[in-house]
Length: 560
Image 1: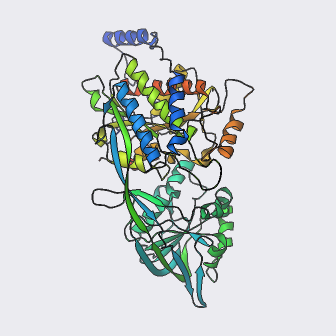
Image 2 (image 1 turned 180 degrees about the vertical axis):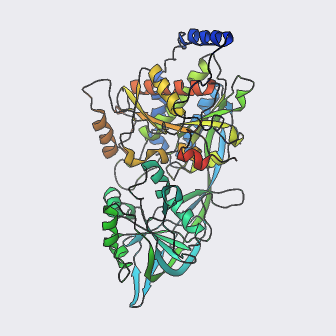
Image 3 (image 1 turned 135 degrees about the vertical axis):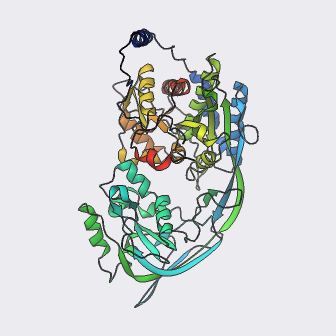
């Protein structure tokens, strides 16, 4: 049975289906009514000063932004391990509290990529960092290919939504040209899965393509311009590696991807059946563009210099008390890493107070609340501070595929990432609530904590697929990810404006420091509601379940 599938197929409205027609049934109903009048145990009160102490250390200049593989990150990992040990939690890594994750770091090392467009009228050489960008390959230190180009629309295979962009196209041995994004008709979170480069790479490889070129649409260019990516053209690339020294996200036989700017992208369609601007017009009118061969081939080369390094996840366990349920695990995660330092003068340390020292502080405080409650959870709890989230959710991906417990025993994931502790709040936002019974649990926990749940105010950002909980979703584990809502306790405080200002002025910048921006009343609220969620999940008779027909439940929860 797959993880989280013990109540698989439950509908959102299903409750107690039995019909009470006997005396025994009537007595049972009486017990239910009597139990319903009992008040649950009061929620424990978190300690704001504990969380302040954690945030101030983890976001200190001493740790230099906690970038994966650095001494600053290692100091942060040792700190978290010491906190776990002081609480009396059990070490659950492969080396005490540590689960070392082996990474391959790829850098250009003077082997920057090249791209030459070849047509009947001659060759056009595109410039790396100006016309196109790419990431150094973690698979190969030398790669080259020359092949015809085929436009494949959005490059999506989604038969359940009537979309197959490869239908009628022969791309075997060819380089596919793919638009970023997805059709407007696809639901946002489902569409985000299919729009992910990982998913598109997998589809291209299944069809036999040998390389791929990504193009922005005008809509995508407005949100994430090519120029922003060009600033990072020299960045290193990371992936975890398995016991056979193979990168965890490797797709063999597929040349590293190229991301092309808009003007050179138009060149690919010169003399083709339709121009790129015609295709953009089709998309704007709600159509899904059909693919076709392009009148060019491309020669691509790419190099890389590889280095192996270790960076640990930090893992602790609080054993459950129930003889049967203790072998099931509720997994708390929060990423410990951040983005390190920038180049330049002045303060260039990206301290990452909100992202994600605050999340780790809340996780540590939630663990303390369980330890000091005097009442062990029925199910066991795992507390995991993961590495390399900023490198592409890599630490959580490694943990979810190499857990210290049987994979099918992980019944839920509760993720803590940049909780936005900016002001005392009235509501929470729970990404993933609509996919599993964890949503109902979260609503009840919010009510116990004097809060309410609000809908996702930014569905276009598809947060559900962008943080560490999604690594567990991909392994079939129901997951939830909370941030504070936008309704402040003080009606004079404009929560939306404060969150937007944080993203503009502090997010992934040196300004995200452990200063007055971190509100510790909000931290207490947030720790309390996360404790309430975990307490119910850990003690409930039934483990969380995907809702019947849920896309992610159906896609990822096949038996393992």
